[in-house]
Structures are given as structure tokens and as C-alpha cells.
Length: 382
Image (cartoon, rainbow, N blue to C red; front, side, top):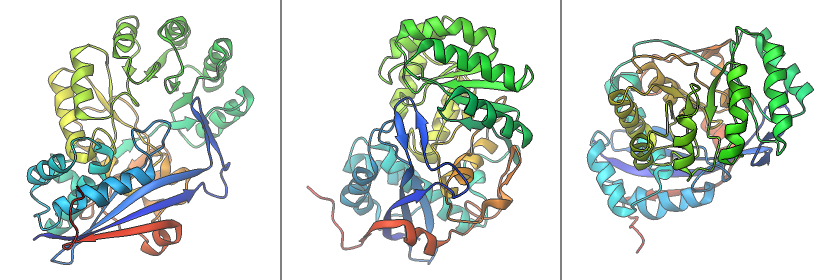
């Protein structure tokens, strides 16, 4: 079996018509979700799909840059290789370009889809095997007025959700504090609450907020300071019992190593686009286990390809004390009928081969603004 061709799609998907057409975090607002999709072909007619969900304000690379890296370097490097040869493919990708795990991760993801389809097994089996078939989910509240966020929190409670994650970082610390207190009052003491300011704070501001977070039993404090400030993350991690969790700061597997060395993390978020597809996510999972650091699987507002892949990864975690996130298929137009996956606050892990579903290629092409193909005639650019 060998890889014969790679199709790359730069596709922009809108929010669903019944949703507000914008989302906001401390770094800005957006009304369209940009994706890079890859379809990896083999000489046996078995194809696999991979996905990257870049959001330029939080990602190392934007959509078109990822497409360029795949087409100019990565796809030509792996064409002709056996998709089961994961280590060989990563060696070839790393040799062709040393960085860019988001681009490599999309191709890596597609390999697991291919292998699962070839073997007739769910991709989770290739990640070590599933220990659960349902994943608890959290709800996400983006930045808005406090009243609107309270109403949205109530709507999620009505749907059965028992974990709420809210965005912070309004630029006004008193407003952020009030937001935490008011949302806690709204959801009551028994619902879990998480906060994510997306790097909005200095270390002193984050320290100022910690007493309010502890008072309101916040479960997770995600990426409070700038992505590169591991020293501040370490200081914050030592200052509270609330788990400090990185997001933007964890771009590659080498960042995982540094977070562990500096004792700057007490909870790892696993994502399929960082630190580099399912292979590196599994490596992060295993490194975290060695240091007794729990993991949770989160979302970058992804389509069903990456969402199903990430939930299959969550199914392999020996322990899962935290609810995960699969917000993409709920919020945006998707490429499959995902009604069978998400049931209230649970994600039902697909049991079919590969990622367990078929994509709607017509829908992908409808939202694709540009497409490229690399085949056996393609060469790595100098």
C-alpha cells in the first residue's frame, strides 16, 4: 500500500444559521471559520481525511500558509510511502521542513483514517485502544455582555450540560471578576466552571484574579498569560490549586517538554492540530502519564473530521476526570450529519472503521475557495 496523491482544500465554513454569526474572545472576533482539509489517496483506492483548524490569532500559521507548507514540502515528501509507516513518514516530513506541526498534523490525521479503513477498525484502536465509548462534554460561552452570557449559560443547562467554559479578557479586571461571580451564581454550585482569557493577562493581573477564581470553585484556568511566558505560567501554577492549562503556548511536542521541565502546567489539553496530529497527541498523553499530569481533549472549533479524531483520542485516556469539548459541529456548518455523535452533553464515539463516518465531499467543495493536488510528479521546493 502506498500514498499516491494528496488533495488540499482551503475551505471557509460559516456559523450555522440558527447561531449568532460572530464569536468573540479577548484576541478579537470572527464570523467565518477557516480550515485546511486534506484527502490522502492510496494505490488501493482507500482514502483518508485530515484537518487543521487554524485561527491566526491563536495559531502559529494561518490557513494559506499551512496549505503552502503541505503542497511545497510535506505532500511531495510522503507520496510513495506506506501510510502505515508512521515513523518513516514523520522522519520524511521533519526532513522536508523542521517546524509547522499544524500542517504535519493534518496529514498525520489522515493516516489513521486510512489505516483504520484498511483494517476495518476504529482509529482509536491504533492509538492504543478505547476504554470508553462516551465522552462527557462542556459548553462554551464566548465574550459578550454579562447578561447575554448568563442567558446562554442557562440555555446550556437546559440542554443538560454540567460543565461551562467562559471566555475572559475584556480589558477590565473588575468586569472579568464580575463575570466569574455572576456566571457562578447563574449555574449554581454543582455545575463545573472553567475560564479562558486567551493570554489576556499579565502575571500580576492573573494573580489578582486567582482569589476570585478559587472563591468560585473554578475548575480550570486556561492560558492566562502570553504563550511564550512559561516562567509566568510556572509561577501561577505554584500559586493556586486550580489547574493551569496551556493552549496557545503548546505548539509542538517540544513545548510539552518545556512545560513539564518548568513545572508550568498541571493539566494538558490535547488537540489534533497541536502539538502535531494524533501521533504527537498520543505522545503528549503518554508523557503526561509519566509525570502524573491529567489530560483533557479540547476543541479549536473543528469540523467532524478532527472532532471525531479527537474524541477517539479522548476514548483512549485511561482516566478522564474532566469534560471535553466538541463545539465545532454544534456551532458551524459541518461536512456530515453529526446527529448521531452528539447526544446532549455526551459525544458518542463512532465505532466504524477509521474515523467512523463518510464526509460530504460536495459540501466540502461548496465551501472550498481554493484546492491543490500533489501527486507522484510533485517535487519538494528548494
